[in-house]
Length: 263
View (cartoon, rainbow, N blue to C red):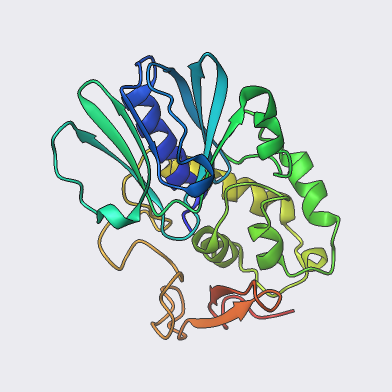
């Protein structure tokens, strides 16, 4: 699943491409909204909230288009007439203006709500690590509300803090020397861990290529994420991987057994 900084960049790209322009084409390729036509509406803004994208359109009344990338989704922006880089069968939403077209492929969520209902779409989320509502104290309180929960699971729960996915969870736990399966209550430096998480996303939010090591070379960008069986960059121990979470909601966790011993 895309990380919060990936969604932030997608929102910025859509905002630059569409905001202030009148829509010349809208094509919702989902059954619930297949007949919706927002042509002649004006795009007011696109912003991210955690891993959610909110595109505001004024068309007779104020609307919000809510999209979510889930695991495979992406937004592309093309000059008019340029060939799309993914198959037409994967298209879920098309927004066109004079001179360019924004295409949403394999979007996990596509819905349209009146603007006054927008807040309800993301009301369940914790503070956004890249948002104006970021509140480290609230994020800490949310995490500590379930002290026996594995820290890896707690960090991935968007109700606690919004924006951390598998990659940042693994990299954050490694840099803090915390095993992803450790209980929240056992993490001595939880405030520092949360602040570092926000710093990681901030450092990468403008980069096309994410890194937590500071090295942008292929296979050198991450400490442990997707490096199972490769030697730890610090001690040489093979990186371990296991599924973490409740049945049906498991996520892959990566760690170094030597640098991150379980408590």
